[in-house]
Image 1 (cartoon, rainbow, N blue to C red):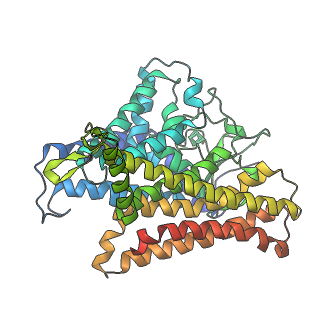
Image 2: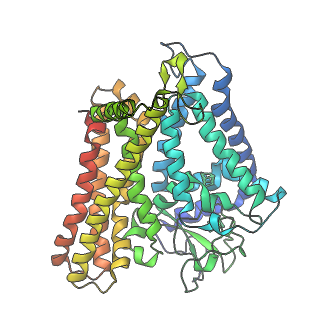
Image 3: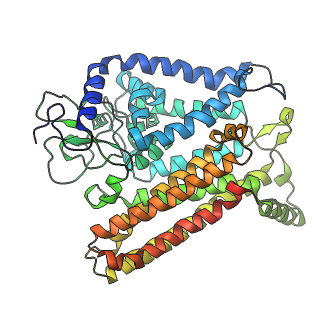
Amino acid sequence: MVVQGANRPGRWPGVAARIEAFFVHHREQLVWVHASMFLVFLAVIFLPLFLPEPAENSSIWNNFTRFANFAMWGLWFPLVFLSVIFSGRSWCGLLCPMGAASEWANRKGLQRAIPAWVRWEGTPLISFLIITILGQTVGVRDHPEAMAEVFGGTMLAAILLGFVYGRNKRAWCRHMCPIGLLLGVFSRIGMVQFAPKRPRPGGDRFTEKTVCPTMIDIPRKEESRHCIECFRCVQPQARGGLFLRLRKPGEEIENIQKHHANLWEVGFLFMGTGIALGGFLWLVLPQYQWLRQRVGEWFVDHEIYWIGDTGPWWLMSVHPERREVFNWLDFFTIVGFMLACMLAITVILSLTTAAASWLSMKLGSQRGFRQSFTELGYQYAPVAMISLVIGLGAALFDPLSLLHEAAPRMVKLALFLTSIAWSLWLSWRILGNQQITPVKRALPLIPGLLGSLAVGAAWWPGIFGL
Ligand code: SF4
Ligand code: SF4
């Protein structure tokens, strides 16, 4: 395929050519961007530890600790997250100080072969679950010490892993980063794609013999998930390598059968939705307090009193100065509640996806059950994404209350309804690619809709209160 300037497939080819030329031209300057972001990261994460406790009436405009908290949870998290729709993993390649530090450490480090436990597909999922649950038990959204622990610890892990494993690569970004997992999965619905000029058949695969820092076999690239948009494989004048292509949002998922559908990713969509829900609901549901009470009574009845003791600060919130001290009972009930929510949502979405796949096969799809299940599981990407934005980035919506008391709730509801409609559309298109005629598609759409509505119902207390 000849790709030169605006002569390229995709939407707005002239815009794509200009963006590509700009970043290729300034590729070498990215190091300064990364260094600046590293300093900003250190300031936001660690400076609040050395400042006095914020006064009750202080705000983000006159207190750095409050500003740092809002910058992380009100701006960085939800905006980076939503940015994948418009610019894919641009955060990773262009701005993230953690990935850059990991790669820098890799150049100076031991450069050992990446072991199988790091390359295992489940590793980033486990890393995501640990960080999300730990974030809740230490109170990462409320306490600067917890923010320093979670983000400082993640930075340290990224640097250490980079120092030990890989050869001029970003093993952390490809295999272990919990944020990279989120951004990678949702970059599939984004408008940016780096596509091979001379695609080779055989499907997406991992290789260490490549210029790509996340170990993508360039000519075989089919999926956006691992591409951090570093532009290193883009040479506008060359015949090979990748080129920047703009596309309509959701296109990759609509045609997921051509883009290396992956069951682990579907598992993440289900589990990530459930764990985000659990992390929000334990804070607002009276049933959680009831459950905690019953569990506590059971332990006391059995004369197990250590359950009331406070645990280590790095595992749970211990902040007497802010009137928040968790004990082991809090720790176990929060973790248990979050895992139970994750299990419940995973079971519900697995059943609805299985029903849709079964119906699709009955109505004429030639795909096997596993393949059909994996493809249809991606329909929940928009619902999962909005769940994570509402659940983990709720602070983004708080300032809207200055406009109107009900504005945050209304915006969250509008986002959620949009995500359900989008999920339905994706399901419609995926079923179309499974050769189900438009007339027959209504039936297998129903389980998918029920799954989205179940997630919506579970979010109801989070969006509208009880
Ligand atoms: S994968 Fe993680 S560490 Fe790597 S660049 Fe993206 S957010 Fe940063
Ligand atoms: S595919 Fe290209 S742009 Fe994407 S991460 Fe690899 S080298 Fe960078």
